Image (cartoon, rainbow, N blue to C red; front, side, top):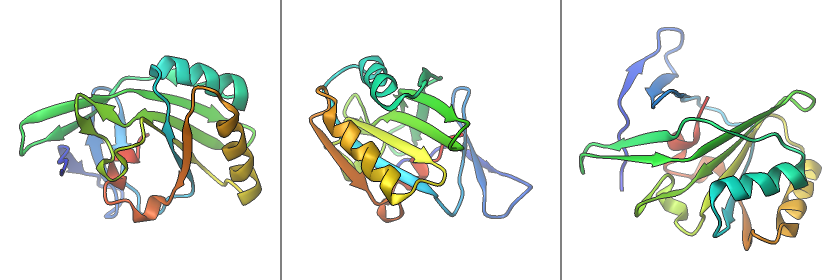
Length: 160
């Protein structure tokens, strides 16, 4: 399944494209620094965010939904989107729903209900600590560390 969001070229860089969603701008960059987890958690996104805020000491807040337009099907899908900025570690934390009415934000990982993406410098020790804490949350049934670079739909995950 291919998603073709509408876009326009950004004049500042040849390697960046700007994608427009409801009120969020998605920026495509060639390099990703951070960690990505797929989460199986059969709960509402606000419940998952509450648990993540409590256990990982985040301050996730709801943002406008991320919209992906599939021109072949003439269909728009909306995915819930939570965001937190960690000033101490200089991280940007995103929680995105992966499913919307039979459509997937990242079709390669259909099993994941949610994606937890942390952009910034995350050491292996920090990634393992986050992984362990995620596994300790009772509403999360499965946690899988994903290789961002191997995803075909990685463009759908670069949110600003």
